[in-house]
Length: 97
Image (cartoon, rainbow, N blue to C red; front, side):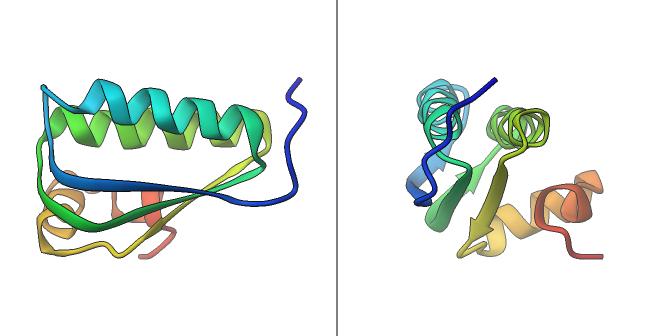
């Protein structure tokens, strides 16, 4: 059971989210989701995302679902939108059809 803070947390991702950086994002999101019921992930400064970065988002979304929390993606630009559409994960990660 998690003891969530009612205040939302904001995690900001910048640059490339790939094999070299995804583990750091994964840790930041996991920590934020343990402490807060709602976590906003700002992706507006992301210039590239590969499948490892996508895996970090899926893992965070699953953690949020499991703990009764919520992961909200904001500032989704072209690099992330394209990957979400190609993988069919747009609805799962953003709630959009």
